[in-house]
Amino acid sequence: MTVIDISKDYEARTLTFSAEFSAPIKCVWQLWEDPRQLERWWGPPTYPATFTEHELVAGGTMKYHMTGPEGDHPRGWWRVTAVDPPHSLEFESGFADETGAPVEDSPHMNMLVTLSEEPSGVTRMVVCSSYPTEAFMDKVMTMGMEEGMRGALSQIDDLL
Amino acid sequence: MYNHMVVHRKNDQKADKLFHALSDTTRRSIVTRCLQGDHTVSDLARSYPMSFAAVQKHVAVLERAELVTKQRRGREQLVSGNVQSIRYAFDVLEQLEELWRGRIERMDLLLSQNPKQGATK
Image (cartoon, rainbow over all chains, first blue to last red; front, side, top):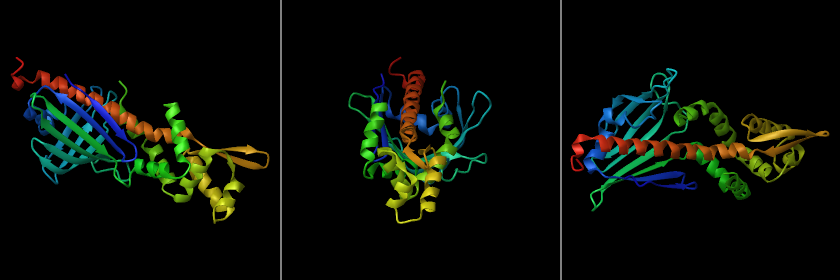
């Protein structure tokens, strides 16, 4: 059974997901390491992903595209910044243009994935995604810190 | 099924306008003020060390990004902040949450189908 915990930190611009899988750490790592397995969960069923480049090493790049019901192909990229199999993986990810090159100025995220084996035998996966300083969320968050914004934020809370 | 990556992508243009509009300190300050209450362009112009025309230009950029709306009141233009656009930024996080909930479910399913797991079979 998967236990999911999600925490959002608007000020730190991070979103943290935790899940527990009743499988050995190696099997969970393979879901990331093996591109054919990765393709089976990265995209939603209506937009399956195909990884055309998969270099799971520090400095490596990943390229993928998704295939939509109307034959549309949204593309994405990862830039791997650190890997420590089977314990952790860190990468940046964002949208790509038709040639697979990153779309400049579009929001991209830093992702940190950590896996650990619990004494009970389950594997705990924590995915922490954060928006870098120059991105979208930061600009919005900077705004949030300006005087008066707190009131607007509580208004938003009421709407949500 | 509703696809978040795609929604995200389609909204890139909207997001670009939003980034651009929010990249300027004066414009951020104008939005903040107008979220607290309506202001006329002349009111706003008095609050910043710049010309009426310059403030009007900033308001126009914000209007294009849908961060504020303008309404005519007599001879004046009344500027109001648009909470909806700010909320859009928060929606990006909501979408991400949904996306990952789906991914974790699929990972779990794959692991339960994986013959290498052995132990449970």
